[in-house]
Amino acid sequence: MTLGSPDLPPSVLCFATSDATGGGGLQSDVLTLASMGCHPLSVLAAITVRDTRGVDDLLALDAEAVAAQARAVLEDISVQAFKLGMVGSVENVAVIAEILSDYPDVPLVLEPALSFVDGDEASGEDLLAAIAELVLPQVTVLVASRREVLQLAGAAPSAGSVSRDEADEDDGEDQIDFGDFLSGGDADDDGRDAGDAELSLDDALERILGLGVGYVLLTGASEPGPQVVNVLVGPDGVVRTDAWERLPGRYLGAGATLAGALVAALAHGMEVPEAVREAQEFTWQALSAAYRPGMGMALPDRLFWARPPEDDNA
Image 1 (cartoon, rainbow, N blue to C red):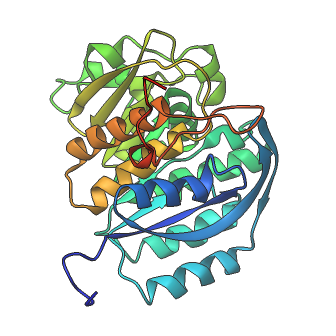
Image 2: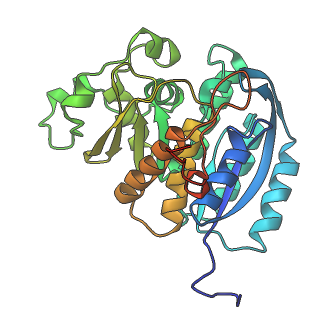
Image 3: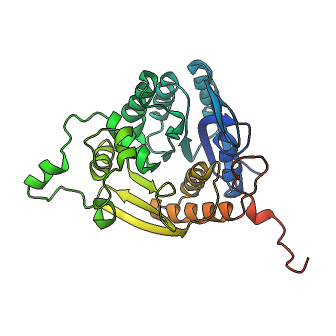
């Protein structure tokens, strides 16, 4: 293949942890990106000690080693998109944010994976603050649950922000319209414990978007109900809402698959709303074909399209 050929697959550079189960982390990114026709580039930032039932430990690599990996590949290969997952330490967040700042025109998808973070510990608070202050202003799409949005907003700098109560006193021209779906959904007790106790979901979204985040894809897998409802929110309010049949069981790597599919679609040149729809369709198909190789959660089958069809007559 000739360099520069239109057949050259888009390259996506992912910063994340290693997951030996293959369910999440860089392994999920590589499978998802390859399945969607991208060339995956990976920078290892941390190692998870885990099985399909849960995580035992998270071991962060030295920040200099992370930077060296990224600089080496970026000096050699042009990338069409970046994906950032859990990277394990404040130092890693800082060095990666500095690298990303050299590529302001390349889309960045952030999947914070905050289930690894204890927001009540000083180290967890520092990590949340580093992500909020150094990474969020560079993000094209943040893929996060309600709880993660509240955690990040609670850690984000609030200087100059306007609360929704204060906004109501203004003429309303600059207030973001999040629609009935979000306006009715203040944080539950779990969410309030995770972030700023005074923040509603609307407040949190407005604060995050105010930092420069292009869009927030608010995922609904952790919310109750017969459907999973995902909402894409931009600076002007709700962009799209998609409802999907809730599949039975528990899955390891569903969020990583969604974020990976989204960054793949963006790397192929799709606009954000269309890329979000494409990513959800891919993820639903992968979860529908999930399998359970261990004693814990099922793993999405990112290569569902490559499996032979089942023989109903067998």
